[in-house]
Every structure is written in C-alpha cells, then in structure tokens.
Image (tube, rainbow, N blue to C red; front, top):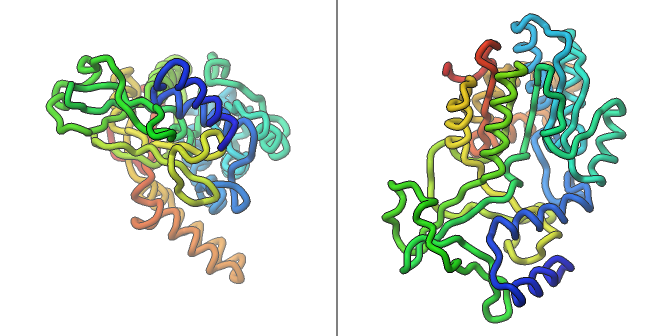
Length: 348
C-alpha cells in the first residue's frame, strides 16, 4: 500500500468518504510531482514520443495560422503539460522552418518534469499554472494529453436519487460509495430520469481552463490545439481508469503511484468555447493528421532513412489508425474571432 493510500484511509476513517474529484486530484498531484512517467521505463507513451511527425504537424498547424494572421512578432508558444519537452522541440523546429521563433512558455507543476524539460528547452519560461502566462501577447498554444489527467466529478443515480460518487472503505478496502446529499440540481433535466447505478461525469477544471483560454484568445489573439482521448457527444458511464507500467490497473490499487485519467468531454468543452465567442471545432486525431499531410511526411522520412521505414510506418499507423489512436483521440481547435481558422478542421 502506498503512503498516500495510508493517508486516504486515515482521512476516510476519521471524516467519512471523499469525493472522486479529491481522490483523483490528490493522487495525480502526488504521482506527477515525483517522476518522469513517460516512455518504456515509465507508465505510458504519448503521441510525441511515438514519432516526431506528431509534433511537426502541430508546429506547422500553428505556424500556418501565424503566417495567415500577418506574422505577429510578439506571439508566444505555450504548452500545457509538456511531458519531456519532446512535443515542444518538434513543434518549434517545424515553426522555425516557417520563420516562426516564438518565446517559449511551459505550464508545468512537476519539479521532476521541469528538470527534463529544462534540459530539452534551455530558454523556456516555466509557470505553475496558465494564469501567470503573459496576458498581453498572442497565444500559440498546444496541450496534448493534458486534460485527461484533470480531476473529474462523478454523480451516481441511487434508489434515493442522484448523489455524488465518493471513495469510501468497505470490507477494509477502498470502494465507490454514494454521498448523502441530493444532487439533482447538478444534473441536466434530460439525464435526471436514469436507471439506478448510472454514472455521469464532469470535469470542472477542464471547463474552467477552456473558458479562461477562450476569453484570453479573444483579448490577446491567437490559436490553440487541444488533443486527448475522449468523446464529442454526451455519454454516461464511468471512464475513470488507472495505468501503471503500460498496463491498466485497478483505480484503487496504488493511489499516488499510478496515472489516473478520464475521457475528455470535448462536446461540452467545444460548447463552452463557442459560448465565449471564439471559433472552435472538433475532429479526430487521425483525420487531422491526415489532412495536415502526415502521410507525405512519413514517405519523406522513409526515403531519407529506408532502414527505418518499417518503424516509421508502424508509428504512422499507430497515430492515425482507426483501431489505434486515430479515432479514440480527438482534436479541438480554438482561435480568436479575428484570427484565421486552423487547417484540417470542419468549418465553424
């Protein structure tokens, strides 16, 4: 049992069950603060680690918008949750090929990951949160697999009505339990008449971030690309999952020592962005990368390094394949009303 599990157990025994929101938030805060979770030696692998092509397409996407916006000299590159800095390195290299060399701002709360990122991007300026990123310059923002780790709130339908889903202790083990307070007001009218044990999710942190980002894009100008696994239409059911050593594990097995994630509700986030007035659109990762010309880039890399052609093809298939990341992962493009729209997305 992890140290955090012991702490949770004492807290629950003393004060009662805790919301899923708190369990996930505190678990991930401890998890990310202490390690580099990426790669074969870590717990999971993200698209930028699979192939340089992903970051290059993202960088070219931002550079294209910047060129069509008139090449503003003071635009800054911002990345949320930069991992090892791999995405930023590849994106910035692609941007430089188009004459774009922006100042780099990384939003990263983990000291362990900051050390890795600082080695890859020596001139980067670090921020604990998006709030301290400069508010007077156009934003060129990327966030890949950032939203899925933000803590979610779960509600569950019980025989007594809707309640918050909590983490308690049953038979000496962590278990999901229902909270004592009615939560009907937090449930959309169309979802209130549901079967017992129905679970619905919301991510207040993701909603607040997109709202803030949309408002800042309108004031500062710029564009943003958010990529993650999730869904574009409302759905029910728990998507909370845990990964350790590249394997799915029980969400209660080792809090603080595993990665807890949930599917991103892009449909809701897209509606929030549009409500704030920015242009916002959704597509799948496979469709976006294909539209950006990743197939041609793969051919070019294979021609230049024929000995790696098999690896390049495998990486391409993993990124765009419908049975791989291509369909599960979604892309959300946001841009200020007076800025160009991003390539590869449906018209708003």
